[in-house]
Length: 367
Image (tube, rainbow, N blue to C red; front, side, top):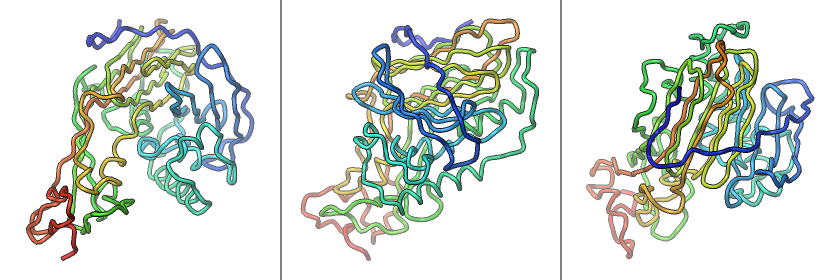
């Protein structure tokens, strides 16, 4: 069987998989993992760094056009090394700083993509944020023998949802492939997902109040597959992708292939392992959290542009009678912004008016 989204994107052919790297060191939550830097390989993307053990680790991969992609491998029933929300909302460099041993410098390929230079205080803050989000994940999943019956248990599905960061991952009631809409909220009060305008310092920046609020809405082409036996594939163009596969059952590894644009790679997942990969544009926080000057928060991302490229995933070696995987995928095709600020917030001057060139609109001043 195969789940294929028929949007004209050709199925990928992925020639290589990661070579296993020897892993040493005891598993702990954070900060005690050896770091590996793999040599450049002509046969595929370079593995920049790896932190963790053979069962649970984080990979940084050289992507298309010099981009750095991140993959998190977790082992049932343990927590991953990176919290799902932290994974989705932070850059590859920030993820490295949050989980690498204290004082370990960024690899050059990651330093080239770091948004800002991080001092030890900022690095410690990233570590604390990831730890706090990890501590909020459930820990009540039972230790189960590796299934040879060809099914993903209810505990497998619940654990996969927590590691992926979305309750619909592993939900058998979800359609195999469908379009979904999710929202992020930006403001400077505790009830929002992200801060609004936290890094703006440009001329004509509006004086934001606690009552200012912006919503970002992502259009996602979504895959949800549970207890899947056989080949599985999913592809669609978009600005970014988040794919994951859990090898629930069987007596051997499955191959999790993923690609974006012309870059492609794969990982081997042993029974009980789940791989999460994130490739593409860093979307949500960058749009409203840092871009409110002159109304730039309205820019969003249309279903086009330089970051709108093909994304694909597939699962192979999953056709044995006792094999079963759980797979989840989200490809963001569009991101729109809308102002939710009530007019009274700025004395009846809507935040949407903050797009002039003379800084004269009332919303540029605190009332």
